[in-house]
Amino acid sequence: MAIKIYIDQGHNPLNPNAGAEGNGLREQDIVFPIGIELARLLRANGNFEARLSRPTADTQIGTSNASSLRLRVEDANSWGADYFISLHTNASSIESATGSEAFAFSSPSAAFSLGEDILYWLNRTTGLRNRGMKVRSGLYVLRRTAMPAVLVELGFITNYNDAMLMSTRPELFAEGIYQGILEYTGV
Image 1 (cartoon, helix red, strand yellow):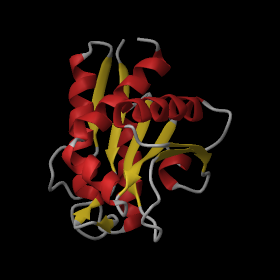
Image 2: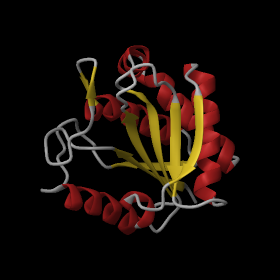
Image 3: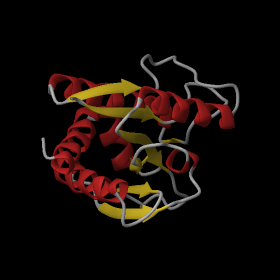
Image 4: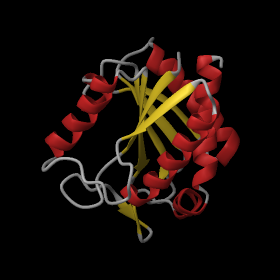
């Protein structure tokens, strides 16, 4: 039976729940094609099924921040996903802040281990610094999912080099996450 991966491209095209901005770019526009490419890679491998929270660039989820998050989680839970991966870009007032990091509800956990593999491979494919896994039990998408969930901050939208790499080479980020999933699942 195929492993079901729910890919949540964080945020909405418009408010409510629009994402961070930096270097003339918007978070929701960066994570959308990365999710599309990750779904393509997973679907090309007969061991996986993939479902996207935002199958089109203009898919709008919910009418508030709370309903946007709730509907994403409900969709993954009702589909029976085996893993939930939420894609985001980080932001900082420190323009030199760089690299990828990820969050899980707890450690040790399946989600924490999956996140470690994803971060390892993101560093290999993008060259961005691995800032490590962290526990964030308060994040809704990590707390309310019925399956292991990882929230991945791919890079800093406020760092020019990170932002340009994410916006011009989405396939590198999708490949890194894909390789991390392969390593974790062993398929």
